[in-house]
Amino acid sequence: MGVAAEQAAPGGAVKAPVGRGAAPKQFVSFMIDDELYGVDVQSVREIRTWQPVTRLPGQAYYTRGVLNIRGEALPVHDLRARFGGGETEATDKNVVVIVTVDGSSAGLLVDSVSDIVDVDPDEICDVPEGARAEAEEAITGLVPRAEKMIALVDVARLF
Image 1 (cartoon, helix red, strand yellow):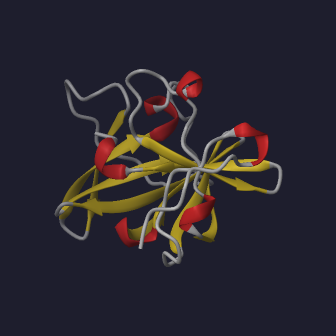
Image 2 (cartoon, helix red, strand yellow; image 1 turned 135 degrees about the vertical axis):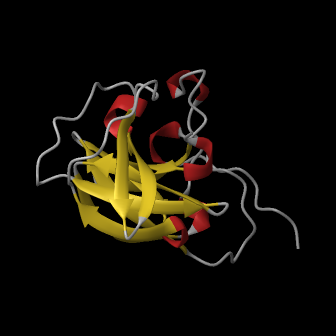
């Protein structure tokens, strides 16, 4: 069959064209400050409480260091810093979402994990051009939920 026509979503956002009857996707939702984000559940390997990392010289401004996970050294990236919000004052209330993409794993430092969210692909709206930072390609869509929107993060585009 054909591709569904673009439709206006609540608030005037344009929904990305998606095939009709596409299967729902699941996202792990998490908070950074008061903002809600989501990553594809299939990329999430595990969720851990924050623990101190080993800092390395010359690492990116958003990289907190490396963490030893069962003998594997994984970089831990501070998503607040990566998205322009400054470095997270990490405490035992923060969590690290371990993700795997294309065979490589990394930790994402976030404030908290909220839920696993089922998303019908027809619900996903494009990020409006005026709201997208030029260099920020990692936010690939928005999902309206109650009074908030979930910003969908493509972890393959983060680093």
